[in-house]
Amino acid sequence: MDLDKKWRIIGALQMVSEDMERDAKEFDRKPFDRITVAEYFGKHGAAIAAIADNLILIVKEEGE
Image (cartoon, rainbow, N blue to C red; front, side, top):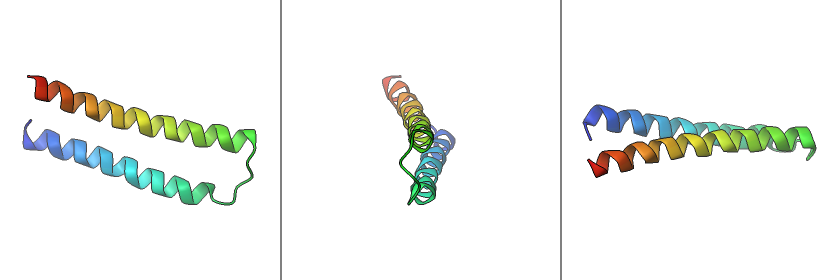
């Protein structure tokens, strides 16, 4: 894997980490209702998808 691709992956994963930290603070003390839960799950789903996409890139690169 070339250095540029590694840095893009690291940047994407760092962004996910920062987003999740910000989201945790944003949801602190919010009511536990269906709207909040749906939004929270949506954000987690997006983070999981971003991590999975980056892992797929890594695995494909290692297989070449």
